[in-house]
Length: 374
Image 1 (tube, rainbow, N blue to C red):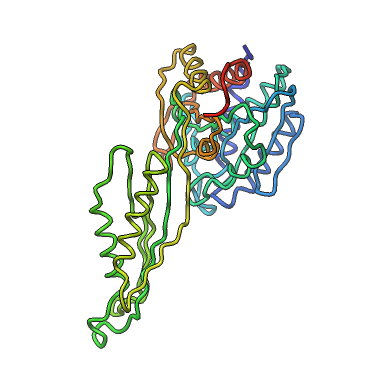
Image 2: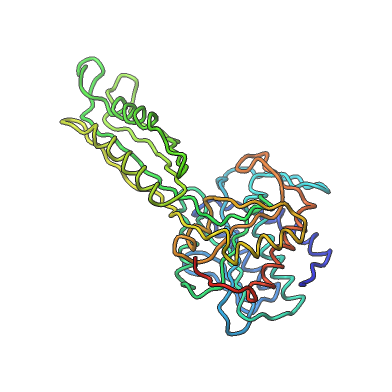
């Protein structure tokens, strides 16, 4: 087994704190990417570079077998101008973005350092990748570029997230996000009384969408997260828009939900009222079987570490390889809570188990029987 020296546990805590303090909202990950690149160079990986998308690649050379890709996303949900408080105690790290995904990035560096120190070479290359645009409307653009680069000729993708130790996420939750905009002539609230209002028309659409009875098989969801429109209290609104998040456990279910929403929107079209429905984000669904060798390997490693395991579905970077029929799982590194808030925290002691599970998967990945395809 690849050893995990005690000093690397101090290293991962130190790196988590440093990375958390570098703001990296989606589309603005440059500073954090440069830091990760420079750390990979200091570690001594065989090849390190930034691609045109802003993803960071570090290579640990192996044999001629297909490579293994280990990744963690660079971005967080917190804006550039937001103060990022941080508190580190003997048992806990607290601060926005500490778990999601400063710890994942720190684990990437720690595993790289461990590989270099141990010196073991494997049947194929190990690529450590820090990718952009995982959060929000980033549309998983970074991981799309990564998967395009490697194609299908890989052993597997393992995606690292800070929280969720024991979860083996082998299914990608399908997500489609739309901006729905209503357009009307508008006018004065009194002089043009009776003319259609974009706000009123949009409100009717939202109300009708909210009445959709959503299926539980496949489980689906609909959420209107943003509503904006109008210019003043005494003006009939000429335009208004909302942003809606649609999700389903499979791609066909997602497409059916999209079509239901589209029918509702187009059903409000009439003279003087026009709607636009623009796609602003898509995360394709996909999965591999619970019996897939990669899933079984992840579960076996957790069992050997006496960590209770559960199979999960989620919206992560794993969606992209999974949607293309390529083996991928997302693994958590520790326990904690309150993600995407100022109170976000992670527990330090379980990180050792999180790192060990990943090292065990790396060591065994080439020796598992079975196809990489789903």
